[in-house]
Image (cartoon, rainbow over all chains, first blue to last red):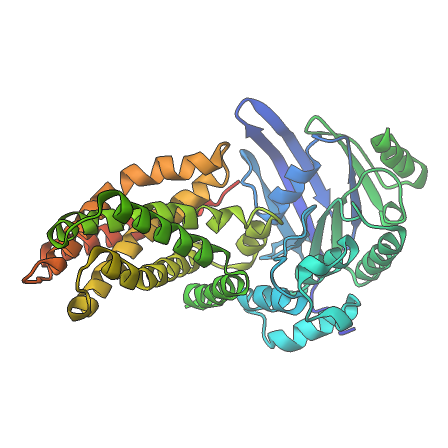
Length: 234
Length: 224
């Protein structure tokens, strides 16, 4: 694989608030995530994990507060970063082939040499033999591979993943865990929402638990980290 | 520049997916044929009645068909949340609208052109001599339908009762387009055909005003 061309980039959430009418999805959430951290967001359904990730991706505008990407050793430089985002849905077209999907998004993002980049990513995610098959003929695991390839098109320094293991079989989870481990080792910042412990949660270097839109636990130590993720499963 | 290049890429995607599935074109052509044939059976019009009522019936059929065609425009972007992927990829969200409205205009125009010979035969009107002028009216009318139609498709895709919402929002707004297109078409079907520049001017103005509004405010329609 080609060495990544990015510097470690952190994310700072400052007093993020999101309201839908009178309902609070997030209440003054402030977090500082360092470049290269692999953070697991845990919490019950409706706790605000997806909203926080979509705000970080720039898909949802917060009602108050701001999100800043920070790069450089002192993390003082605001970075113009396009984070890679893998949502619960695959975010690719069923009526297009894997290659057509990736080429479409590569061209929209203005990536230089899109065909070579797409060929490399298709090879990396193990879909070389099915590159010209329509995505609608793919299993959930294969679709997730296309989704991850799409998120990596522009070599993002920050990767946001919303329950990436949902619907994957054990082999799919193992492949995803290995892929995320490689990305973590490359120095990418990973922020992912998870439900319970799994091979993937084992990659987390920090766990944050949300409840009713507020941060109620935030830890980097092993035992506590496990308890946060386990509690989320209850 | 990036907007235009993104528009071209997205237009290619719209055309490729449509010609691969042919869902919209097939459904719309069949729908318009049914409406025009049923009208012709109901009224059994003479040649002069056809000239008088035909353009109105034709444009009503186009309008109803357009509301069918525009419905899935943004709805199918929700199936796999591909709209989010597009929003994250394009530098200007207007490119998403521009590509979709160009595709909708092309599909609608193509449907109308395919429909004209059927209309000419069933309603006993002669269209060959005025084909270029009629094509201009059809194009401006289709654009007038597609611009607000694409915008309202984005709104209705996020609403409950979305199947009802689009025609309810769209059809009243398109009344001026219906009147102008019908009048311009009727003038071309007269024994002494004339290209009504006043109605064409009206259609062009309608198109420019709504395209500008979409350019200015379209981004907010895509927000969650």
